[in-house]
Picture (cartoon, rainbow, N blue to C red):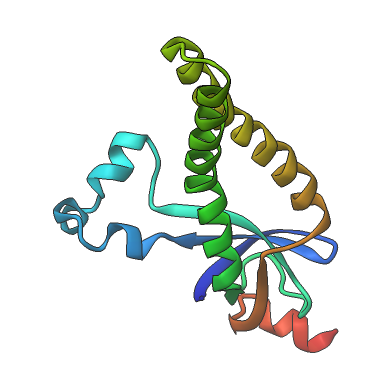
Length: 151
């Protein structure tokens, strides 16, 4: 998956890029009036910021093309949306085998659901430091073109 973004900060081999969330807001009837209703309700604008690997040396202000691995993004979505349900039902089933109490079965299901999010939190915290999911692949437009040619 590729999209255009603007570099807003650079830190070594990584850059913080900001892009406009167009696909999420395209179908909204409020988008024509200058604002998506979902974005307004959530208290945010249509911009999304992420950390990207910067192998080509983009600098602050550059418009760049960023790429993310679609398979990896789908895997993350499955982990966040499907795994909690699977673990919730698994723990519910395990407690149903151990006891006939509906209360304990519900508690077991809730425990499996919540423990999944705790695991995802710690996994994402450690993974974010060690890897990157977005990479800058091309500089589309550079505000610093003259300075870049002198280097």
